[in-house]
Amino acid sequence: MTQLPNLLFTASQTRELDRLAIEEFGISANILMERAGDAAFRLMRSRWPEARRIAVFCGTGNNGGDGYVLARLAREQQLEVTVYQVGGNGKIQGDALAAMQRLYGVDVSPVIYTDQSLDKQDLIVDGLLGTGIRGKVASDYHSAINAINNAQKPVLALDVPSGINADTGAVCGVAVRASCTMCFIGLKPGLFTGSGAEYAGEVHFTGLNISHKVYDKQIPVARRLDYSTLKLLLPVRPRDAHKGDFGHVLIIGGDLGMSGAVRLSAEAALRCGAGLVSVATREQHAAYINSQRPEIMSHGVEQVEQLSALIEKASVIVIGPGLGQEAWAEDMLGAALKSDRPIVIDADALNILANQKQFVNLVQRPNCIFTPHPGEAARLLGYGNVNRGGKQIQADRFEAVTALIKKYSGVWLLKGSGTLVASDQGIGLCNAGNPGMASGGMGDVLSGVIAGFIAQQLDCLTAAQLGVCLHAEAGDAAVKSVGERGLLASDLMPWIRRLANPQ
Image (cartoon, rainbow, N blue to C red; front, top):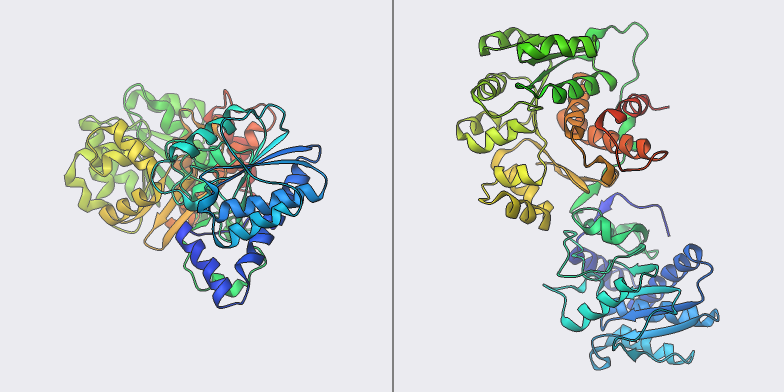
């Protein structure tokens, strides 16, 4: 077992890595299966050292073979092991069949699962499907998965929780809810995005000791983004620095009754180090925002002509927090997009863009950063029903973000569990963050953080990657002492400041 790698590979790419290890680097498939079962067994013993009664569910493919190896090793350590076979013994072939036959040598014979009770088991191992799922889960596997979930026992999944699409994280009708997952050879993107993160639990990884040269022969589908690496890109501030060295962020938004969003975004930009932050908002909000946070320069802007001077002074623009979708909002968006400044397009600005096609040509440039959640992404891709469209987005977030880049260009953040940061240079995935961050204002804070980093002269893609990771790490830090429920966007501010000053 190793620290999680950053490279992510699809199921088909992982099978190719497996083939290359066998055919070009001389490692037998049997040895790889033994290594997989051994790694999973060692994880099981370290994670649940008190477990004595183990139920191992095996399918008919190599995922089941990994389960047979684990079961044999567990029995050799005097654990009580029951192997439940799903899918029929007659379908088992090759190395999986050999692994099952070795199981007989320790007096363990697989039994067909027919709804036997799991009440007396201490632990369940899921070796049913792994990456082998095609379409919806078949009925016999469906019943076994439901039994595993209903047993309310700790579950160790081998490679991928059965029923989870390894590439997308989508649930294929039903899926095993694992306590932890031991992933083999290639780290699967579906473990970290969509529903996958919920079902995979704590993810562990082993490369099965195959040569790094094997990985050089495959281009990863995505990379995990890592705050500890990205933070090194923040430049050290010279002792003779002044506020002008760290840029001027302009936040545009806050239509009538929606001043809070721009206020949060502006403070986030300041807290991550922007030299100056201005807000262009409705006149009735300007004095209030100034009184709440005097470091924010808040301007009442009712006519689009008033925006020109503010744009001229800005080094980066955020538009969308609390913007609304009325005529005032459309005027503000049009003026902002006609400038050549880097621009973070968020919230209602995305909805206007989806509905008003005259703006599309103005955003097709590399210094536009878009930050949609799935519903907004569905609108931007022209899906008719937003709720149904949002589900389509979640079913394959990688496909969706690729389609957004193709249609609009620029840098895209597809927010949610396993936020994706994508451009024509590839896709990054942030697997930090937590469900407590599903509350109003979190996206406004994120847009301010990204703009704050652009103001400090990071390029748009790097600022987006670092901003997403720092924001997620701040959310994780904020919940450690008080829990997820009730977390406010403003609770992140002290942590944003701390994380923007890495030691």
